[in-house]
Image (cartoon, rainbow, N blue to C red; front, side, top):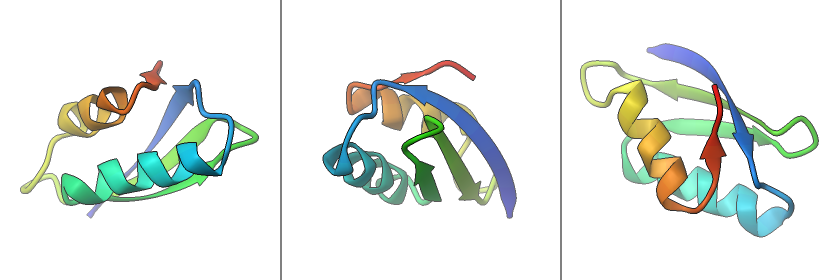
Length: 67
């Protein structure tokens, strides 16, 4: 398993947390959102999903992944 920390802009509430966590789950990853810091700790299997696909899944929910 691989861990990554992503800086995500545009999250402001519990709905945002749920949307990001669901997007991660849908692509086969798990994550913990730190709303105050604007960060998402992601855990995933590189043989199943790429970091770029994870970023795309978050961005499809309307948030900006800046790192």
